[in-house]
Length: 576
Figure 1 (cartoon, rainbow, N blue to C red):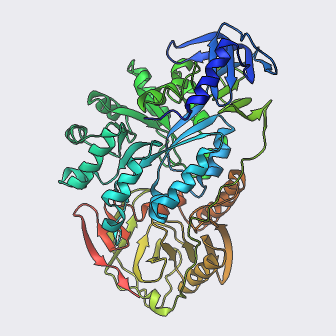
Figure 2 (cartoon, helix red, strand yellow; figure 1 turned 135 degrees about the vertical axis):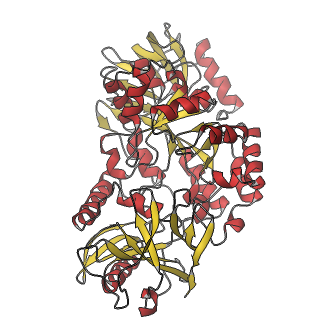
């Protein structure tokens, strides 16, 4: 539940505007605006004072001394869009993502805390959250209960104190997502306790249940799950609604399911749009070239969803579900002044954006960039070791095969890796996961990644450890050395030269560059990987998924090669 940000004296001053004792700073006249409760387009006037809508209706204020008047004739106004399930660490960082998204109308974010939780102590993470709160958009957060992988010291990180401190924050609205739900079902009472604590604090608990059966959904509903965003078919949407789940439809770089799901809902004449939300679910930068939540709304409109429902799935429905509709998702008295001005209901890209009473876009032009925040809490990427020949010893009898973007299975190695080179023209490569601090490594082979990548190194991974892939140990080492030199990032090397790189100057996991620049760098390195045989949907997600133990069947982790279905380490990591 989002708490009121205003103190008593501020509330009294706001009420004085109604009484005519004070003038509002801004009055938007001749406004045609969408009212999410009435599901109607209302004509009237909107008064704004500071961050807040003081009044929305037919009247004009009694006192207008010093008031700015804006004539909104010829435009329609909708609430600021809300992204309910964002991973704001997909190469970009929360500030650069919000700066980009907010100027296209997405001004509120409910965000994953995993990178902050794993990278630093809570008090440092909270210092970053508090800085973001001072900027003219709204961040709310999740409290993760698991790491999505097998950490060497997970029980030391996820404790009652560390998780409880996140749950206690008023800007944390969600528990989860529950990627380790098999542990919960198998009897993990610690996770169940955190779920109960979250719900007692008024939070929602989000699942992560791809392909879940009706019995599994029922069992997890009993254990506390409120919503799920993993429906991939219309049947899965109906099944979740049947069991009382809140359903978030996904349109992401890895799962662009939204058009087909909406088509199925309309064809079956399901009157359920009040129960649905939409998300881009942590898409990588290039996917956002044509928008964030405005992109989802456009898809809904093109599918034939009524505008009132399309906008509600990105505004009011989300605010109501997360019990923050007293502040967000509605153009009405008392809410944040988050307003998107559109040329028409059919075009969700705003010409003007007002967020917390601050203009982020006027007459089609962005206003000044936001002030940067202090990222010094994030430990710099500083690798304290060099690679040697011993780090390129491969002796495992099987490797990891990429079946598709998300599924990896074991396969029998049928090449001789002893000379630290693999033949071109086939899709087997060396794969190394090595501790950021140099204490351990895991060496195996990977099939299906690419057939001609010679050396690739990345400090971007689920845990901040280093991934190396390639056919040539010398080029892999070159990529590693260059990655160290630039302070972390993604580096592709070939024939003794660096071919492409994407620096991640914030801790080796995030970029500080604006989204447009980052999109260009991402496009360049992805193009070079595709030219060398990478054949899946999103190479950046591959780097995350290699370690993700919420996906079948075998993963490379800090503990070693891990069998997901049987929940055991097949080959342990080796000490260096």
